[in-house]
Image (cartoon, rainbow, N blue to C red; front, side):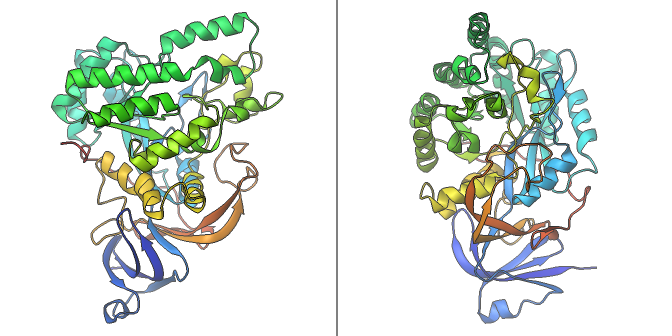
Length: 467
């Protein structure tokens, strides 16, 4: 049975175009577009019609950095693949790329299989995986080749978290050399974890135990130093590099310099660094624990440089690094010792709306909104034009977005499985109204009409930005 939907009268916005057009969806894909009111558009016939008059019709968001069910610091991220992907849909995101984890002493395959088992049959939207490489050895390097062949084409390494995920420069170089050969993309958590651990120890010895010290010990200069080192290691290896969750202006400067040199270096930032600051980490009592994430929130003056980086394309992607822990019982593990607060913030539901607010506030254009949230992450991680755009042949991952609706972000109304909002009380303009995932309505006029198991695993090709 063929199923057809037509979306009429909206302003279709992609990374490259804005056009008042009707969109015909057939069997889960976009079949055609035609300028609204023309004979071609009026010839579209379908069982289901959606009136998008006065609304935006945009590609579903691609969030290329989430951590559902991630084990961390003796606990687990509070969103499962079921709750997390449902919340993503509510926020206008229709594809996530989550991180499968290799445990030290175990194979990549074992870690990837474990994440497939967590996700399969549970997701409301489509999903893919990156691979966290915690243990670089000859077997791991061979496995990287196999994973690239089967559509896991990006590998994350950590210069932070000694004893957990940490890789030294030699291990990083070997993995980068391998990715230079097999077409994979190395994603880097760039912070000097060895130096940070010394500063943590010294701060605790001085009795500095409150959440705000998390930001003070994870210094911006140590993010910049690690970013510089990662760039030069990638240059030696002849490999591309993608630096995740860039938070410091000094790190942006390192990326800009490398890109000016013509290197294949890319940068991602996250809404928390664009909208929150160390003021939040310093909230009284233990409230600051809600905002503990790594890289940490920075002083407010860093925000302008991050926005500038997004406008100049020295930063290309905004992902969430969604890694939620409840305040009660999880963040509280760090009472009296900030180093024991689980690192991570909820945000998968908030990203598209916060970035639309940035359009309203004049930080970015509408097309740049779609570029950094949909098209570029899809291209960066080998899913474009299947994902990230509205064009014939693309998956019908489509959001009807009301640019005038106002909302107040709150834990009372969000759908993420976490007991607080990092944006509690924030007023924003713009709201998701209807969401299609491969043509199926997941959110219908602000009601959840999707189901666990609709979302399917999406193998990826290699990065589409490489020379």
